[in-house]
Length: 321
Ligand SMILES: C[S@@+](CC[C@H](N)C(=O)[O-])C[C@H]1O[C@@H](n2cnc3c(N)ncnc32)[C@H](O)[C@@H]1O
Image (cartoon, rainbow, N blue to C red; front, side, top):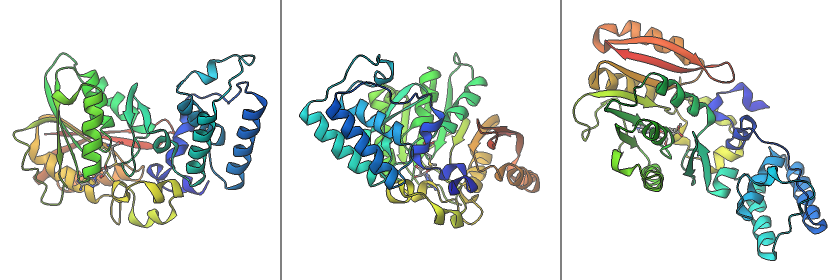
């Protein structure tokens, strides 16, 4: 697929399916339902809609309100939809035909075992970021108090997954998008984590200050916009039509926001505090070189780069020295 040539962050939101453990849609339906499902499979195929089986599976589970149960059914347990359910199924399949990502169609998605609301145009959390959370948690003591900042919280996925696993942690989550801040708050409230998160609508710039954030931080994390602007020309319709491109556009070399974060981290991380970034695979050596060149004013040490599940250098760990 053409998108494989560009950054992983450009992958269509629906390709997220392929890394989840899903089985095929092999449930028995009444003859009428089977005809309708077959009709939509053909329509999706004719429009090159990707992940056809999974799109139908998720939409069906949403319509019959039986999440995760379809694939566990035996073939002899027939499912019959009500007239309303069939109408709803067809409406939502029309949305998928219009290339709406299924996460927006069903309005929710799982991230690190947390169920999060998803709403356009807020960036849909990707499975690589679950790996970032795991890497960070491996180094955190869940019995200790700590205060961390997330730059660009989107739906709140990373911050909320960390708060969920670190019961003594407090978080400040910023995003330039009001839609993202509202969705983070809604997800935090649903998960009863809103008492430990402060959400600020703020755009980090080269001035690199966040006025409301006081004192030094134990940790900063970000999955920032890191796609070089030129690569945005080849986006799949799922992204270009529905997701906020400011969540992706990292400027000419993809490093604009990353440089702002490095400057901020150099001022506001505690000594030996950590900065974790999710980046384009071309970025780790560039970031290492940048830190080396600016060692005397940044005092940040490049600790390591880590690969994602696809073998790409995706995560960077940096320490304040
Ligand atoms: C790639 S998305 C990541 C969202 C979320 N952390 C996740 O992993 O699902 C980047 C987010 O950064 C936000 N953002 C972009 N530029 C920003 C800036 N200069 N300051 C603060 N947030 C920014 C976008 O609105 C978007 O929500």
